[in-house]
Amino acid sequence: MSRGLFGTDGVRGRANTHPMTADMALRLGAAAGRYFRRAGDDSAHRVVIGKDTRLSGYMLENALTAGLTSTGMNVLLLGPVPTPAVGYLTRSMRADVGIMISASHNPAEDNGIKFFGPDGFKLSDEAEAAIEAIVAGDIAPAQPANIGRAKRIDDGRGRYVEYAKTTFPAGQRLDGLRVVIDCANGAAYRAAPDVLWELGAEVIPVGVKPDGFNINAGVGSTHPEACAAAVLAHGAHLGISLDGDADRVIIVDEKGCVADGDQIMALMAARWAEQGRLRGNALVATVMSNLGLEHFLAGRGLRLERTRVGDRYVVERMREGGFNLGGEQSGHIVMTDYATTGDGLIAAMQVLAAMADTGDSASRLAAQFDPVPQMLKNVRYAAGADPLSATEVRTVIAEAEARLAGTGRVLIRKSGTEPLIRVMAEAENETVLREVVDGIVAAVEKAA
Image (cartoon, rainbow, N blue to C red; front, side, top):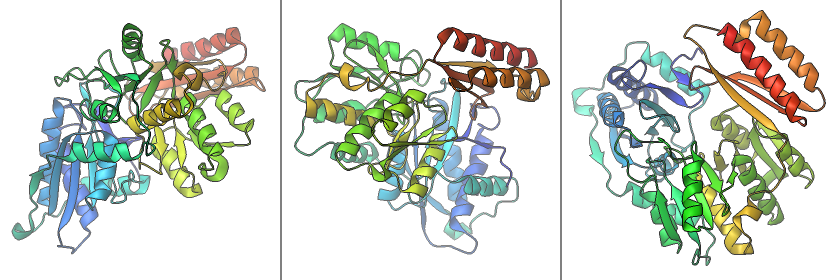
């Protein structure tokens, strides 16, 4: 089935511009309501909706609610909560569908809509395509007596806070640890500091004053320098940098050095394997993860299973293979023992648990392997352009692949959320790496 609205992580775009308009949100809500109700089913149905702190969230929340209730869905509004909280509460509250309004790490002028099924997992490509097909047609409304109701749930954040604490080892506390938590002025601005404080840490909050416009602005996982500066200024033992909807995390050690998702996954995989908790002796990650991670795992008799880019594809492979740990270099860490999607806070708590258990510093624990030199550059292209189909671009890429054969790799792909071509390469020789990437970027820019 064809897909035009949905990308790698739901529907996303610039607020008040197609497809992120009130009209489209209303139709998406009605289509999702009709899809999950099925034909002729007039029994009570329930949907939970969470959002981050973007100004446009109010508009989209109301439009989705109108669409959903028009098809007989009862809507439970959670307000600002992390994306993983929506996955958790969809299951906990026995909802038929969960929706998160967020554009994750994107700037405030963007927004997005992510759907979760009744099991708390993101929808499959097939389900999204089916909803998209309903959007394009005539959506049958509910009978007047079956129109849904909407209700605000005041303790949604509190429910998630209590659950998150249960994922921390029983009997352990964070007493004596000074922790910087950067919430990106986003969805976790209250929940994350509360969890860490209740577990005993001295908490230094950053990015906890959202105003509708400042989400991810100079803070959060895409700007870890803000967290690093706070760590050094306060002499903290660890820095935790979340993104706008808190489904990804970047760690900053006590020296101000940044550790990405690959290092966090390496730490967790090694510890879980030692504890007999790593199912299938494998970690699932995307094609973007560093070769150094693959070598690290192989040295411990563990496997790295690679998927296409997108945490949803990581989760699909985890569920297919029965694995319980996976994620992305960007900081999406998926632990299906605890959550149905990436959870930046709970992943960071695994690092804190390792610190409390071993007494080791963050700098020791968050540098599990030496990464193979990697370079990533983004090239923006105009709407309707297809630079990767250009003969010159394909020739340059083929030459780069031949040059790196046996010593590195090249990965070129379109972003699933923005009009960008992502040019990534890894090579043992950094001079060769720069030449390869710059050559491909120049060719793509010319074609774009």
